[in-house]
Length: 148
Picture 1 (cartoon, one colour):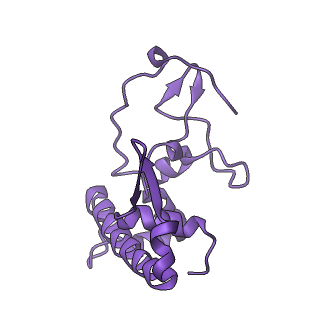
Picture 2: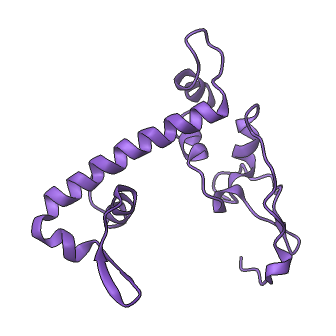
C-alpha cells in the first residue's frame, strides 16, 4: 500500500509504553498477512491509515518473535522469574546486536580482504568513503546474501 501525505498529516510521535505488554506491541508490529497477528491498530495514524510499528525503528519485536512468548520470558526474566523491565530488555538486545554487528563486520573484512574497501563504500557530498560503523557493515553484508 502506498499513501500520499503532506508533512502536516504526520502527527508528533506518540508516547508509548509497552513495558507491561510486549504482546500488544507484537500485535501492532506489522501488517504481514502471513503472520495473521496485525490487529489494524496503531497509535500512529497518517491520513486515516494505521502505521505498523515495524516501520518505526526497534529490534525488540524481532527478538520477541525469535522465540515463543514463554521462551522469550525465560531469556528476559530475572532469576526469580520476574520479567525484566522493557528498558533492561532493550539494553540487552542492543548490546547483543552490537556484539553481533562487530563480529559480522570483522568477518566481512577478513573474507573480502582487499575487496572490502571497494565493496563497503558510500557516497556523501560527491566523495566516496569506506564504511566504518559495524552496524552499517553488518547490514550491508547481510544483504549480500552470504551464508553467516
